[in-house]
Image (cartoon, rainbow, N blue to C red):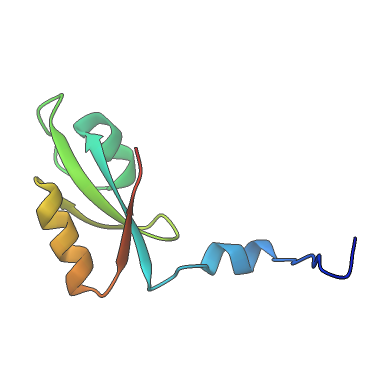
Length: 85
């Protein structure tokens, strides 16, 4: 390692908290995929697609029927969003 290279070490706990309260990710998901992510969610018509907003640690925040609505929810909570495909 040269003088210009620095090795940064991050613990699993530190990694788990990165972006907490500041970053959220959005993902369009099918009703079938949502059942496992949102416990207690009522049964939806198979094939239904909804937008989900998750905290940086993967905790579900909200569901919306439109991408713009999910973005608005992130904005209201002062969260920077990223999309997952």
